[in-house]
Image (cartoon, rainbow, N blue to C red):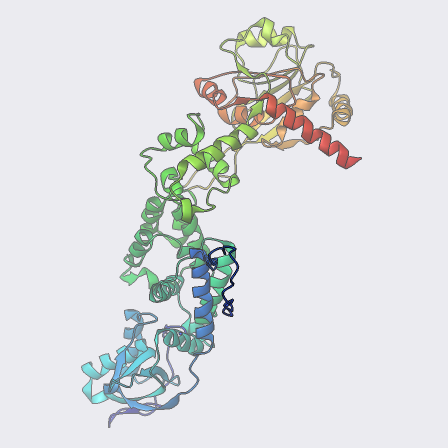
Length: 575
């Protein structure tokens, strides 16, 4: 297939390993003038249909798809060409220098035989042939010809196309490499090519799922074996993407490293959370393994101000300023606000009205008013015997000695759910035996970034005290508990998640008063969101818990009426 200069060994064994690129209404009739004195109205202007920018972008993609579908070149010829007539064309991707050197060594050692033609394009105005597929081999041949003139390779077999445009080059490259896994592109190489396609045709990156479907169909025409994660990565800003290509690991550009698509999914999630931190972690590939960096990407913390830029430009300087502006001055955390934003379809119409943060804030505040609705809720600075003795259900953690004494004194008045700290059981109450002991899952399993000598704690223990439960053996206690659970429609299990354990509050004899006492902010917030069936909710605890109550809204008369109307509608539907 390759002709060598005189004196070169003819029997060259195959030892070829190269990473090659993958693969344009009827007119109205005039009426005759009438002698009538009746005045005629002026002719109506024809209606002009308006087309949105999104529709224009969609039509642009559809037109491009149709044009590309019919312009795939099928005419080519295969023959030997002089190496002196060949030039590089890096439209699809650039070669890896290490691969160039490896092939050059195979040629020098007489062990290289190439059975795959180079794929070239011959513009009519140029005397040269430009290599689309095979630039690594071309560079290796050029290197050997310069270093060993006596072993010079004169001609190379080529598959010749003529006058290919950008789209045709990409399609030809992809078509000629689909049959060989060794020619697969990396994720970053595909991403870079995808950016070229978007830039060449000035395609706007879609924002809706419907538009993305057309966009993906277009990409498949260029890259049938595309990586789906590339469609996500291209939505990142240029300020995030460009530095990725500048990262070098062990003298190899990052775009040439074959890193799994799953890794880049983790990077994308981190970059949409905090792009600067994600980039900082990505650069750790220079010092750590891919697996270690992947774990670090999972722990990238949220940058709330950057998250808000998904909607459009804003002038918020701090996270606290943004939260207060969106919530109307309430003390929510960033995670709560993000949940509210997603629930209110905050990205809708962002192209048309991206900077209208007053509209976004209005929807967020309405969301919280619907989610955080409690009857007669109040914060108690100090609890005393009069308050504790009147409760139907108490949720407590780390009770003081004085509180323990009051709890023991009025143990027949209330049901009690007593939480321990993370990884610990709750403190013991004298003369009181828990009816049941539960394990409560408070956190998800934690990712570690260093060697540890003990497993992270993610659970706590909670003791349930029921006022009239038997004090004999465990079997009698569980039978009593299960009988009560049947009448109260309360599920039972030895292990609960925090998101479910509020159901235990159903076990109270009455739903008039409930007290949440000195529990953590996380536990307090959960129970507050799920105890609306109690008539009065009292809370005592730290300053952060007090601030949390400032975010709660009492039910208005209108909301009460709406609730009653909804209940009536549900009853009508059931009938």
